[in-house]
Image (cartoon, rainbow, N blue to C red; front, side, top):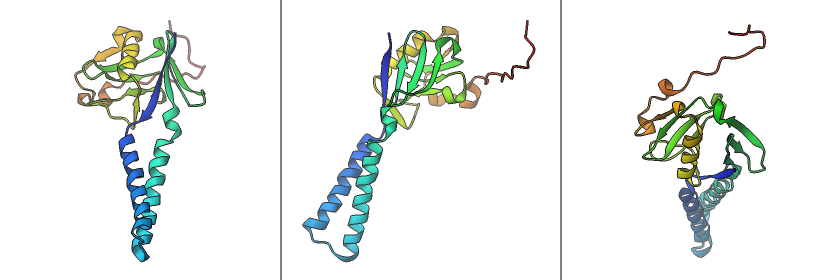
Length: 176
């Protein structure tokens, strides 16, 4: 059975605030009849704030989702295109904080890593139902690969990251 966890904006309140302030500045031009430099300033800042806030909230990144099933973890775009998929058996390491329900999932390469954000584990995004995603990952990854810590921010990332897999060229002799 597959379960989806959608990415969502981490700073939504800030973006809504920017839209609100921008709209108030645009309204001030009309209500108070601003002219000259005051009008120019209010129009530029107001339109800029509304545009930036709206662009952030409408970003395609918030349509991404993490799919978890019995075989592995997959990240998809909003159009259902696969960004990456990692089988549970190909996971290299998980550093998990049970108290905060945050973790770093190390897939089969640096481009296949995922952070379940929260206290001590900042990311530019948030994820819906993080505790359930945390539980699904920790339950499915082999226990020997899961390292539990109090807070992810207390872990030396360089030391904690697993060694990258050795490149294969096809010319390597078989190992016994």
